[in-house]
Image (cartoon, rainbow, N blue to C red; front, side, top):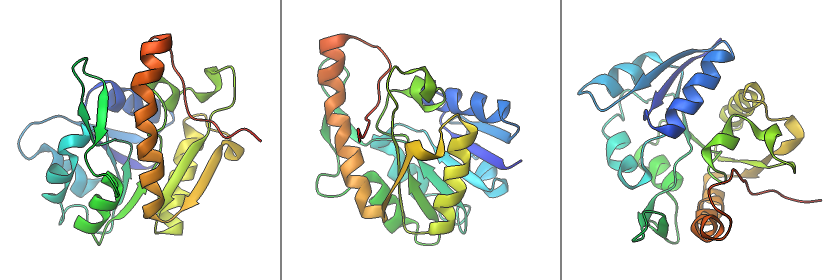
Length: 198
């Protein structure tokens, strides 16, 4: 059992919290109540950033002390929204939210994952007709191994998880969000994920 704080109580955060609780972890879901994020981050071993990516950096940078030595799992994408509310452009072109978080939180182990799929797939990858891929980006091998084990708890087979390397590789997976609005306009809101076919 691991103590997990999920920052963000929307569809992504709620879905992850439910799945991790079902897997036997002790989970706290944090809303926008003043001080709630600091309290949860201070007591958790792992913190999951499921907040809207556009405001994530400012929100998490304020928790630098509480996140010291912790694993921060970043599942968000930082984008501007188009007229229809779907992602339009990257906020950090030539970089990534994960890199910005790692720079702002040097004593925190940032691991990027689960950001290349619609939220239902995060906790039910086997429901897709084809095998999806979950990517890992981060500087600390032990942190990535811990996150890999968490993904297995969510139903990800080990062979479906690909470690891309350091945190800089997150700029590639975050850029994949630019596929999303076009796919959704073409086929509607049906769960999908990026997959590496071999």
